[in-house]
Image: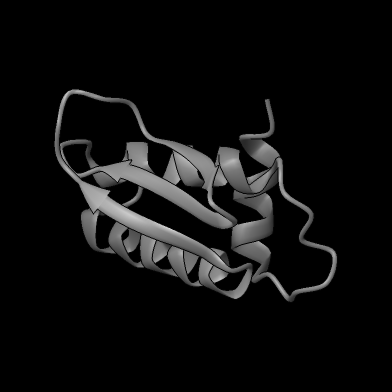
Length: 87
């Protein structure tokens, strides 16, 4: 199990990847699951602030696995996460 600091760092690295892919990552709290959508040509990922970092990392990795990342560099650990959560 990763430490909270490592999970926070990984979460922030995933957010940076999405920013490179022109996705806006929004952190909000409420009674919802994390997800992504296209809203008037703006790609948005809404992350539930109430979820622990471990869940946030899993969700972002899963979403990333569904997106074309061939044109950008991904750190090996991010690529491994993306592959491991590819459902």
